[in-house]
Image 1 (cartoon, helix red, strand yellow):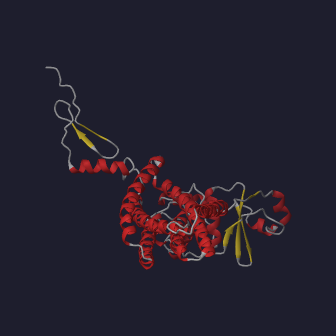
Image 2 (image 1 turned 60 degrees about the horizontal axis):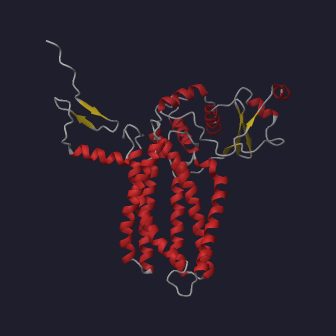
Image 3 (image 1 turned 90 degrees about the horizontal axis):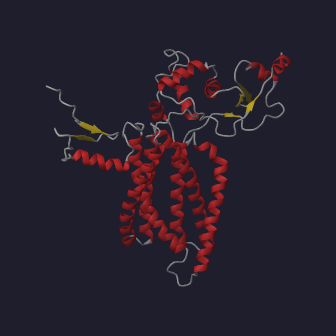
Amino acid sequence: MPPKPPKLLEAYNDSGAVQRYDEDGKPIKPKSIQTYVTELMDIFLPVGYPESVTPDYTPYQIYDSLQAFSSTIAGLLSSRAVLQGFGVGNSGSSATAAVLLTVLQESTGRLATILFAHRCGQAIQPECKFYRFLADIVNDAALFLDVLAPALPTYPKVLALCGAGILRALCGISGGAAKAELSAHFAKNGNLAELNAKDGSQETVISLFGMLVGSVFLKFVYKRSAVLAWMIVLVTTHLWTNYRAVRSVQMRTLNKQRLCIMLKALKAHQTRVPDGMVDWLRPDQIAAEESILMWSQPKISFASRLPEHDDITPADLLEFVNLPYVIVSRDGHKTIWMKKEAKEIDVIAAWAQAYAGQLYMPNTWHRSLKRAGWDVQTNALETGSRIRIVVGEEDSKKSS
């Protein structure tokens, strides 16, 4: 008797959806509620969720959706105020004046975009949590200026609307760049493009729902006192949910604040933990202690310009002759000059020595940080122009 041919039993995709087959190899049509829920989630979540994203993606998206909902409603109230500021509904206003006011507002905003991108563009990546929250603070400030503008005289009104345009431009730069960095952090399996696309779908649904609810607000909330009261409620909700979203993120790169928190923990446990062993300091533990806005940076910085005379003395070069960096102390401030051969892990070791006052071996740190789950390939410490110096042997001989 010939053996029975193999049969197709079931198939599944990256999202976990399972299709079973009967004895004849035909799909079993009835679907469970869980299957329908999975198919609905596939529209808005990356394929393979939750394995295809980091664990902090879910809490961040929940709070981010809530903040987008309240922001949409507040945005509708401010949009009505902007139209009133442009003279809509006022028989004494002209269309030309409204257009010129719009041009002035747009022009100041675009100039602010160029200036802000030049001044702060390189600092956004390592400090993306700070700039993500800052974006919503300045955006809410712009909404309040929009709401207050119709009640102001002509020239203060122009200043208020231009100020709102500037703040909104700052929001666009800092929020957009920080969001791109957060998306790169959440993506695990090379699915950054899909994650951004699905994030856009989530925002679209939330915005549509927010506009639906906001339309009811526009109908019943029109008195100035009521508008201000609701704006305070919506903005407070918006900032709180956005703060919770940013707090839930567990970045794996070491910026200045996260490295300082780690060094403080090492110092507190130095009697029990060997130097440089940070296996027990995971990103989620450091994130729990991280401050979003109120962090005071120590008087340490990386060099952001080419050295001038006496910026680095022969004695400084001799002290760090065998290290890939030079730490110069002047008037209570420490400046770190990285050498040409320095690697990313050397940048971390340089800041650690400048802050803690002791030498950390880069090779030991590299292995220990990787075991703890940190990204040691990304330089998140130098937030300005990266200066590298070349030190020759002659300099060391002269100094001796």
